[in-house]
Length: 103
Image (cartoon, rainbow, N blue to C red; front, side, top):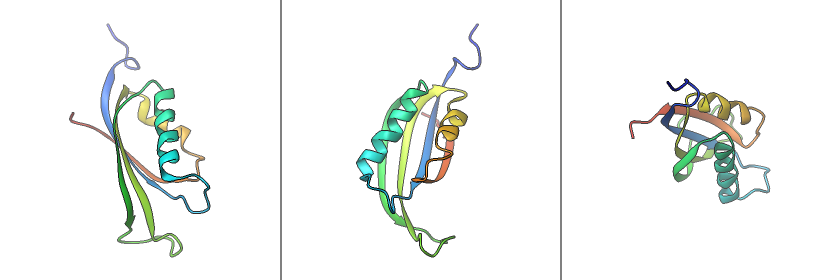
């Protein structure tokens, strides 16, 4: 019988990155996030850089657009919470949304 933490599920995480004031290029930031996922026992299957997009409703008038990135990965059921916790203090990640994928 498998425990809840060892079962693997497919997920899709969508991120909005705020790279203002960061010396990191988008590719380096994406690779760093991919390594964070791999460090919590996730297998990244696909990475999509959706590019810079303007917000339809900007909360901060100094931050009108962000870099949208999606990761498709398989991981344990606690992976979304662990990933969000690792990114909690990361200033380059503005928003994060994790969904269970149908893949």
